[in-house]
Image (cartoon, rainbow, N blue to C red; front, side, top):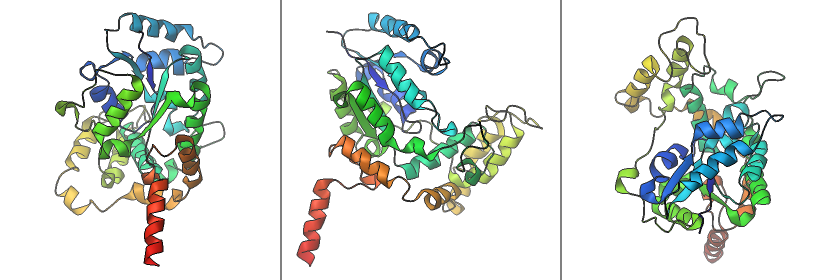
Length: 323
């Protein structure tokens, strides 16, 4: 029996690095048959006028030919979901390309509460050398013809619905980062069952720690100013170059500010979360309701403001008895 390919498309900032480095490993019954470079070269980077599915098909075919018995083949790359700094432009195109490349694949989509993921996206923007304040970053397209952040990228029901339409709802699994935090074993066992991973026996103790956590929010005013003095992907030609972000001074300051006395006195200062809550409160309620309708009661979206039917019934009964 040939194992079905598991395609994990992201989103960014939903524990994707942890999955790639800690979960989708041979010790857990998985084998990644392609990484970001292959995904970029054959799926994301090609111009629409030059795209040819044959390149990635060859990569997958070779990976499957060399797959050890009993391992589930995986391709995990959040860049397939579109880049959040630039509005996720292209996420629908990549979905259709994947359908051409691997029409029988299983699809994994990882998501996270918008109020949390937007803050994390901004912190990643700084990590890549961004210099704009949260207010400017979240304002969107900087100018006609240039893409910027777009809130609709995080209306998850749109991309989830598209993948369900292309691959079949039964072949698309959605997991939340919140479920991973609350019940790592439950999430991982459920995913293994979906992927047909009979060799999965639980997440190893050595593989349970978080991977590459962000620097604290209260460091934002300093970190974004340091980026003006360091070379990076987003600031390739600073007026004065004192290193390269995310290394050098950026790394040193970020690391130091994780610890006392900064963590003691500044932990309540949350300039990014505060702006996100003020700007996007209620923005995703309708989308999350539509997402809940697509996924049914098995996916807990309580962190997204959606209560399960059983919880609603229980709360209703309590209110009735209290009345």
